[in-house]
Image 1 (tube, rainbow, N blue to C red):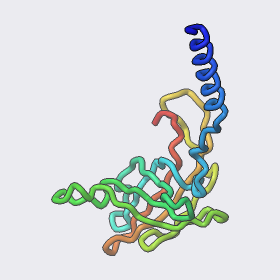
Image 2: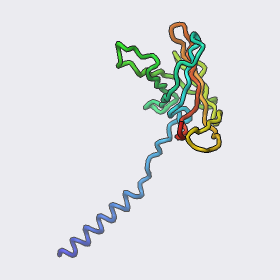
Image 3: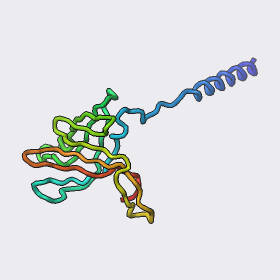
Image 4: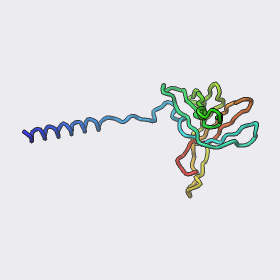
Length: 157
């Protein structure tokens, strides 16, 4: 009887393994706005200062509705030291999937160019690689803040 139970248990376990291994993993990059989303290395210019204000990595993500809506996650640029909880601001925008442009109430002239800029990895002895480039503007209290850069490549600085 123990042998029959062992065989039956092994058969059930093997069947469960075969059935679960046939399930297709979800495609996490199936968002409609995937060409916009990701980590971007941006240089930020403020026209009033006429100089580069800061450089850093910022995120663009899609929304849970998985439609043309995107969120720009801008950290520390608009922060108030008296209110550190507002260090990250989210700027909603709507993406045009055909022209690779985007805009919103506070976001203007957004544009993605696929393979639009050459990036030279500094820490590796490698050739320049092509990366997606981005440009957009955010007006703020009379200043025009210009964001431009490229999609994070995973290479060194």
